[in-house]
Length: 294
Image (cartoon, rainbow, N blue to C red; front, side):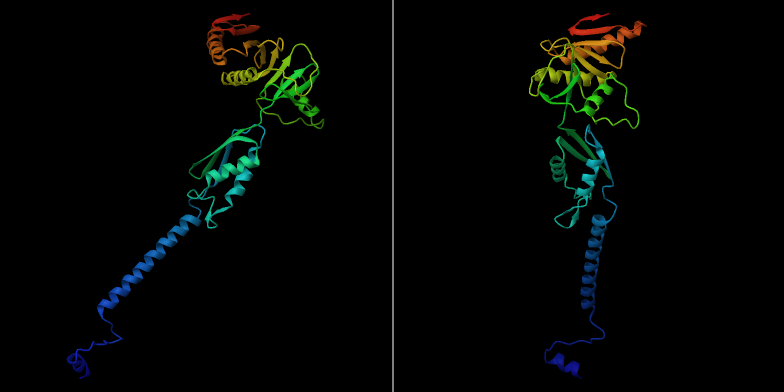
């Protein structure tokens, strides 16, 4: 009776609370579905961000000479434990801070450059060290030069021993006889035939000669020859005789085009050793296309 009275007076039917209308159920179900969808999205993102699926797992370091790859790897592993914006893990592929990590490496080590790239779960780090020593032998003394050709310091005894062992001038010490200093694997070793007294700050070779010597040594390695020592006929002359792991000398001019001399050397050695059984005493590529072999 009350229902009809409420309808007659134009009042809203309160309905039965035990059996709500279908419209209310539909709205409630829509809200529940939206909340579930949002929860699923959040859960999925949390799994992707904080789960192990997109994490950087291995680190490969290339380009080191004196520096230890393990040290650089440890520094990177420490950087990977940091978080971006206090929330996102730095070892995640999406949130890895490449530039910040490169800056951290540059601040921790003497590097010319550090390039970091990702390839799947692997972090590739290519470094170029800012340390390049040139050993210079004069008489019984060994000095170190900078890229400008200036003597920076006298080699310490263990460094001198390492240089002499490197070029085969002395045998490597036996176990327990003392260690050798760690030198760059491709450090050029220069020697003047006539011993001269030098002091720190002396200009031995100019920077162009030093740069060409380094490039010529790198070129020889690409051709399969490991240079040992660059012997100068005189500090005022740009001519060098290179001793190597081969049984012959290579003569080159440190003020002429390195690429041209290497190209001539490569073509010549391929042709010469294809027809000759005996090794030459030297190959001279100092004069362009006019090559001398004896």
